Length: 238
Ligand SMILES: Nc1ncnc2c1ncn2[C@@H]1O[C@H](COP(=O)(O)OP(=O)(O)OC[C@H]2O[C@@H]([n+]3cccc(C(=O)O)c3)[C@H](O)[C@@H]2O)[C@@H](O)[C@H]1O
Ligand SMILES: Nc1ncnc2c1ncn2[C@@H]1O[C@H](COP(=O)(O)OP(=O)(O)OP(=O)(O)O)[C@@H](O)[C@H]1O
Image (cartoon, rainbow, N blue to C red; front, side):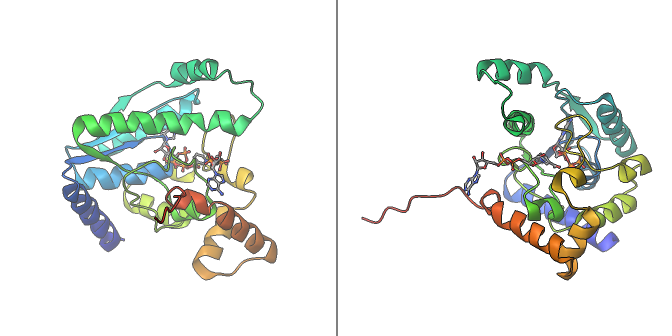
């Protein structure tokens, strides 16, 4: 674990240096993925790591957990409350509430905009928190939480992220809570995806799973391919 963390820290420093940047900024949600990214960032850039806490009609517990992580890591944070901006945007687009996902996906896209403000201001890169399990099935918002400069934990499935979290001293309460995108009340990743992380991780790591799980993951992987690629480009040949 020590070797993996050392390589990750080295990689973060190299990538920031290549980009002419001094540090990293990331959304600190109170969940395990951003806690691990925060811990790695703090190791790579002890004085240039910024966790942004961005409630957007979020439950109070999330912020409490984000602050718990920040305290454990002695991490600098800033809070930007996006609830009013979100409400105003819904009015501006005249949201009729007919498509819950279209509405909910505004939240990660507002967070992405906020992170790029701080990135440019401080000459930091935006670190994403996506892991291999989520990326495989497309469980992220296009140009929202996936709108980032680098993805340090994208090679690790959720279970491996848990192991990294234990090694990095992330508080137990964060490691053990059910993963949630927090886009609506009582949302959990596993319920929305319709598969457990255990099944998903096992399939990714071994290629083995129940027929139903295999079919489901394969379908989700295929359907979400556009999220892992550059936008479609019209090739014009003169
Ligand atoms: N074939 C295609 N080629 C090119 N573009 C295509 C496309 N199909 C759809 N699109 C575009 O993609 C859009 C749909 O994608 P997207 O906007 O992402 O929307 P969608 O995948 O429907 O929703 C995002 C999912 O990720 C979950 N999520 C979000 C944020 C964080 C986390 C987390 O746990 O970390 C999870 C969320 O709960 C939801 O299930 C369409 O509106 C369209 O613009
Ligand atoms: N309230 C929030 N404040 C700051 N950043 C947030 C917030 N909610 C989400 N994010 C950012 O968006 C990323 C995607 O988080 P989300 O809560 O949707 O699920 P996740 O992939 O399980 O991540 P995590 O385990 O870090 O919560 C987070 O890791 C974080 O960087």
